[in-house]
Structures are given as structure tokens and as C-alpha cells.
Image 1 (cartoon, rainbow, N blue to C red):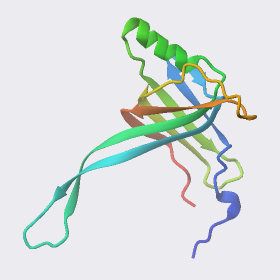
Image 2 (image 1 turned 60 degrees about the vertical axis):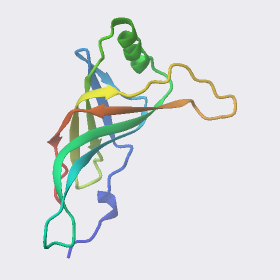
Image 3 (image 1 turned 45 degrees about the horizontal axis):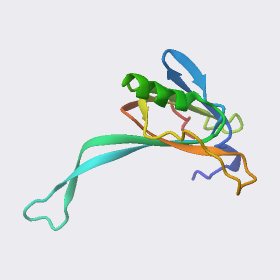
Length: 152
């Protein structure tokens, strides 16, 4: 019987992320959290003689979110470029989990053709003693798992 070894859990701080934008790799060192999700689209399948409704996967939708420290012009510049030119910017993002203490090893996921949903242009908060941050939601068109965790 397998048991969970605490050191094999993955630290959320151990890793890195970067975006390939206009041919340049931009390390996302200012990111606090990044999460990407694939949600399957399903159609209901009803059949005579079955009491339960079946479900057939017919596609998928990729969405993500990032919480960033409010300290870089990177995404504000992308939205400005779109406003000025009308050409939207799509970029690839690589997210790596790399907790050297864990026997699970490293995982590297490539998110393909990411596109921002919204960008905060300006922000002040006189009611907070914390560093300013911003949430940025995005979609992505495809993904690949470049390196999977070890099976432990």
C-alpha cells in the first residue's frame, strides 16, 4: 500500500513561469499565482431504455488566471499595442513546478496562444498596507505537457 510522504508534496513557490511574447522570453518573476484550467464541453446523450443521461465530450475550453505584483508595464503595453494597431497579441506561456525536495520531480506545461481578457491600467489603494497586485484572466487555445511529474 502506498502512503503519502509529506516531502513529496509540491511547494507552490518552487518553480518559474515565463511568456514568449513577440519572440522574447519574459520571465514572470512578478507573478504571485498562476493557474490554468481545461474545461470539457459535453453534450447530453439521452437514450431509450436508460434512466441516466449520458455525456459525450465534444470539445474543451482553456482558461487561466494570474495574480501579479503591480510593478511591470508588460501587459499594459500589450493592451496599448492592441488599442493602437488593432492587432491582438497572443503569446505562449511555460509554467514549471520544480520542487527539488519532492520525488515527484519537475513538471513543465506549455500554454499555447494565450490571450489576455482584461488588464488593469492604473491602480491606487490608500486603504491597504500591502503591496499592490492585479488579477489578469486569460484564455489559451492549446496546451502541451512538456515534462510530467514522476509517478511515485
